[in-house]
Length: 360
Image 1 (cartoon, rainbow, N blue to C red):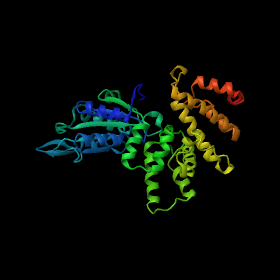
Image 2 (tube, rainbow, N blue to C red; image 1 turned 120 degrees about the vertical axis):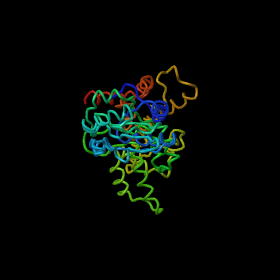
Image 3 (cartoon, rainbow, N blue to C red; image 1 turned 45 degrees about the horizontal axis):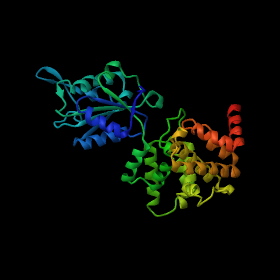
């Protein structure tokens, strides 16, 4: 399932607080974006314990229990984990990864909060979650009957909200500083091939590893850092993160280039740092430049003038990297009015970029 409307983590928290107590909620989303953590946070906020079941590891008897003879009749005894006396949050993770038999076992539990003759304590909440088909995860078709028993919501990442959480959670400063400069690198869609990719969870794992290595107050060898980053992040993000760590002695280098307190690094051995800064510069332009020229404020004019100057300075150091700044991206593109001004001031830069794109 891929819903046309998505919610941020804050939006999902609001949905859970207002909908989950009265109707079962199913959360759709890619692996690693925080579905489980948000359910646990909801349980804590409402003061209920959270019991998690992993759908991909369940058999029908794990839900309905096993039969036992009592007074010459059989009765099913539900599992101890589910059969509780006090209200709780039952979290059915990877619900759409379980077999059709297990899905059928969930029908009455989700719809009526009942297993056989056992009813969940009054005030209990049932929440499900699962990945989408395009996520290359273990996903089975969910029956229409089960779909129709739940309210569905699709979660998306939000960098601002994640950073707010990360600062409070003590995420390693290298990670928070990097994501603040490259918010588009917080999450990447799962690849079709078997390789690591960037998610809030993988950045959290990298943070944990960095803190372990830094616990001894020693510098992390560059080769070790390569192993860590390429083992947890999308390959392109890993390379950029490594370049970022090389310029940590001046974490605000891009801002200083903008204010003309520093210059683009021009030494050949700093080429990866130059590429990282140029990518960060492009991301900043895509994020901060207004979509239409009519929206330009007085304070923005000086930044626009400086941005064009920086592109010209960059092209004198590395023409291809300068082309990368103004080229069309897969997700974010520069405003057309800005590209028109760049064409007017630097026609060779744009014409070469366009001809290369057409040639491809």
